Image (cartoon, rainbow, N blue to C red):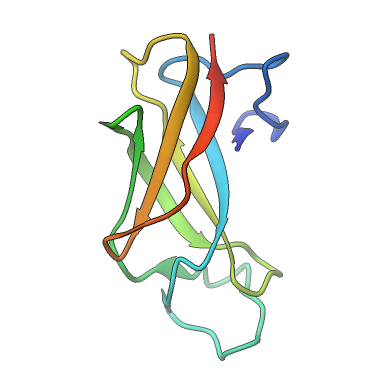
Length: 112
């Protein structure tokens, strides 16, 4: 997970803040529209948007997902832009990404 303003990693030394725009990098989010051939990298233009519903929660609270699509130049690499909920408490926050109603692994980030 990185800060959207400078793409540096969210760490304990550089935590995120409530309401901040972040980017999560993921794999295995499924087909996109328009699609790409199997084994081929995602393109910059047109963007390949994940075809299935993508949701993200922070400590169980829904986050606003702004974009979920293929990461240009990668094969099965995706980026998800989201806004951390404004009322989220400081400390370690658990992020849970869901694509096509399938839960991904939990990721923890630091929030100030």
